[in-house]
Length: 439
Image 1 (cartoon, rainbow, N blue to C red):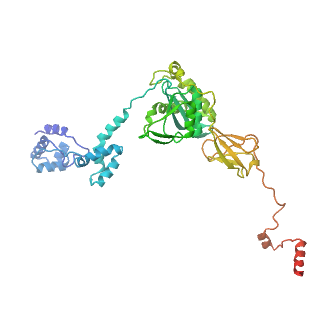
Image 2: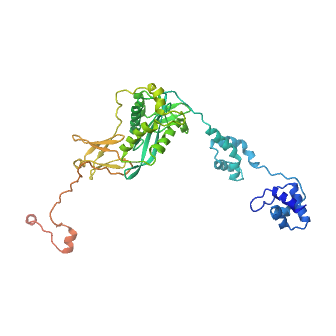
């Protein structure tokens, strides 16, 4: 065999970094090249360099005659538990670590990477199936979708987290957005009222996730839903049928999921606002001037045009009676500093109210503090936690207690003992003492 032939054979070898490992599977032609170069007098190291093999592989095949070889099939040990793995893997979300731990309890002595490789094809197939989701479309006025999105926003000089209520009409893709300080029930209901006023009506059904403000308990297998009574009463008032996504299937309301992302990435990108009212004024303007006029990627139409053509007349008119205002009432005793605490924040009240019990009426964006016979004090709800509200008008000063006497204390026992001064007593004390002795 010539050096050129050996070079061609070497080029065919698949060489791992640092040389092939001992016991590498080689073809008969490679074995012949090793023997031929040895017969020409080349040293073992020279043969290894020439053919790109490990020196141990060269030594092995110089000692042994040629025989056909076959790589051991991976996973043969795990075939013993194949039936268990095939059924158990979907139940644990194809988590190889969990399967590895359970296999060890069954006597498996192999490694975790072997288990991971064994189920890899099943995991990838399951992911492919999960990605394939059929888009569900509804007719005009049939459905809206609602969700919350939280994000950080600059309000004045502070960067605060706000919660954005978003409603999207499923047919036209018109949307409504409003920011709140929290995601409580009063904020949720006020968001609905604002959305229906903006859209000019309400749909037949609204699709939600499963927050506690909407549903107290749900069993998908039996079809049992225990609604939050305050929420259900309001939906009955509007004549809207609420519907819920299945647990862990948030993509069912993908239209509003996309709407929340659109609000964050478009309406809020690089923006700064004076306060929450300024932010909501921008949302109202942005929804009409930008969101309604864009060409939607799925429908290929502008939401405002699609809405005017087919959905505006399909919405149910909202009752002219305004819905009852949702409020929460708390009772507080005004402390010495004159600030009423609510949800970790503090709000000032007149100092004349100190020590008295007041009623705090909590709404989505404001609160009223009432004392019988007095005008109520109104405050905007504070964002964040551990904030202190400001008093409107002149600064408040809480009067201090009047001093009991003028000048320094005269009866401090420690001072009297240290200085040798004698406590001054009135003559009446001595007269009473003498009268007592005489008797």
